[in-house]
Each structure stands twice: as C-alpha cells, then as structure tokens.
Amino acid sequence: EQIEKGGYDHFMLKEIYEQPRAILDTYRGRLRADQGIIKMAGIDEHLEKFMNANRIIIVACGTSWHAGLVAEYIFEDLARVPVEVEYASEFRYRNPVITNKDVLIAISQSGETADTLAAIKLAKEKGAFVFGVCNVVGSSIARETDAGAYTHAGPEIGVASTKAFTTQITVLTLIALKLAKEKGEFSESKFHEFLTELETIPAKVEKALESNPLVEIISDVYKDATNCLYLGRGYNFPVALEGALKLKEISYIHAEGYPAAEMKHGPIALIDDQMPVFVIATKKGHYEKVVSNIQEIKSRKGKIIAIVTEGDEQVTELADHVIEVPETLESLSPLLTTIPLQLLSYHIAVMRGCNVDQPRNLAKSVTVE
Ligand code: G6P
Image 1 (tube, rainbow, N blue to C red):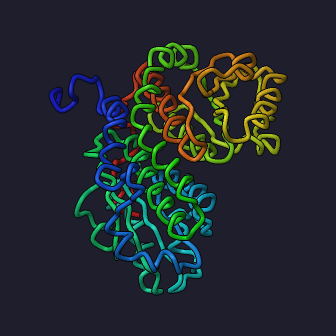
Image 2: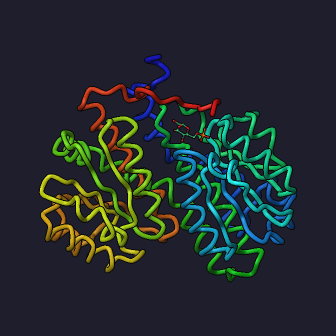
C-alpha cells in the first residue's frame, strides 16, 4: 500500500496532487487548441441529439452532483442550453417529466452508484438520450448509457473525491464548449480563447497546489472549529458546496455551503467570532458583490478565509487569511478554487487524527439505496 501511495501519507493527498496530470489526461487527444478542434467520439456521433435537445438533465450524487452544478453554469452560460441538475435519488422517485427531446447526463466516478443507475433506467424508458460521464471504464453506468465520455482520472482510492471532481468538470467543459461552437454561440476567436486557456489549467492547478504550506498553517488555526461556512457565487457557488462536503466527510466538522448572497436569509445569524467563513472571492465573477458579503461577515466578527486571485488587494485588506490562485476565465475558475479547499479539509482531518482515506460511515461507491 505504501508503494501505491507513491510517497504520500494518504491516497487523498496523492490524488489531490495528481490533478494537473489527470486534467491533462482528460483533455489529451480531445482538445487541439492550435487547430481549434474538440474531438469527442461520444458527442460527435450523437451531436444532433445534443443540438436538438430541449434541455439537458444532469443526475448524480455527492461530489459528482456538485460537478453537475458547475456544468449547469457552463452549459447555460456558454452553450445557452437549459439545464436541470438533480439528485439521482430524488429524480428517480418524483415522477419527473422526461421526453424524447431531453438529454440526460449521468455523472459518476465509480459508475456503480445505485440511485444514478436507476435514474438512467427511468430516463431511457421515457425515451431520453442518456450520456454518461464516468471514471471507471466498463462500469455499470458506462454500459447502461447510450454514449459517454470517460474522465481518465485514473483510479481514485480516497473515499473523498478530488481528482474525479476536477476531471468531471473538465469533460463537461469540453462538451459545453463544443456545443457552444456548433450552435454558433461562440465566434472562432472566443472559442480559441477558451481552448487556449483550458490548456493552461494543468500548470495553473500546479501553481494552486503551491499554496499547500500556507493552507496547512491556516488549517492549524481552524482545526478545532465546530461549524464552518463556505460561500461562493456563480460558478463558485458549487465549489463552496463541495468545500463544505469535503470538510464534513473527512474531518467530521459541521460545514455548510451557501450562495454568498443567500447568507442574509439565514446563515448570517450563525456568524460570530467563533465562526470561520471560507469565501471564494476571485476577481472575475461578482467580485464587488462578494466583497460586500465579506464586509457583512467582518462586521459580525466572523473569521474570513478567502480564496482570491493572485495580486488581489481589496479582499486581502479585509480577510484574516487569503489563499491565492492564478487568474483564469470565470467559467474555468472552479478547477483552481477547489484545490486549496481540498487541501484544507485534508490537513484539518489529519490534524484531528481522522481516517482520511476511509472516513467513518462512508463508502467509496454506494451500490445500494
Ligand atoms: C459516495 C462517495 C462520494 C461520491 C458519491 C457519488 O458518497 O463517497 O465521494 O461523490 O458516492 O459517487 P459516484 O461514484 O457516483 O460519483
């Protein structure tokens, strides 16, 4: 097992550090920025299904559901397709309206999650075209779907999902970009700008990983917290949800993710000088609005730990701690902002003596209801 961990103390840390390579492997052979091409067999062969779709329904569970939420922002913003994101467990039992003009995308690292599999079967019965985004090759979901795209993240052993999440987002981004181009939503130059920027992401993830020593110091300050709040807006709202989930899963600290503006409708009542609030406050994406949310937290003496864009000044003045990530397009920013939050939950769990790779009560793959 020590050999499999490749010198890291835990699989989770190894998998966090594998992300630059995993993201590269995900788009390698699919993305040719220099030629302005995205090639994905599963999409190319069924392009008319996507082009004629009334809407895309995304079903998933856990972290994969968060990747689905990021995809909702990407698909609607870039490709202008209506998207609904559903917990597979709710979708399958609520008699959903599904037609043969719908495309259902099922996202699953393991490809074995029982609820997601059941949602796929239901959608197929109703005539929808079903597309899978899985990591495990030949898994049940990969076999049950009409077509699909693998994430190529390599085996993920840690129960808390990390590289599966960022590679799922990468695959879904490729699909959204392809549709945006095919639907005429993107000019050649805009398409080229996105492809070129996507190619810089592995190096930028590498850079984001350099925050590790700082994140470890911050983790030590907040390791004894009993409650934490995670806030983000737009593309980074799902990142806040995912950050909170990671902390809950492996450190057993209660944490909630919220859209930053929604804070005033409830969570703000919880804020006092004991409450760490992790805020994603990158430059592109409602920055000024997030700054005013931060001011509201500060005036209630909450502790602010902000994920900011390199060179940030405004939030840096206000926050107790800042962690910088490289600048990128807003739609690609979740691939970077999620990195320090993964590291943070990892370090806090280690400091609290928790079983990082196999947290209590959780399973890597949930094959029963
Ligand atoms: C379990 C795992 C999570 C995972 C979720 C969905 O809860 O512990 O890490 O996100 O299942 O799994 P899937 O394999 O369908 O992505």
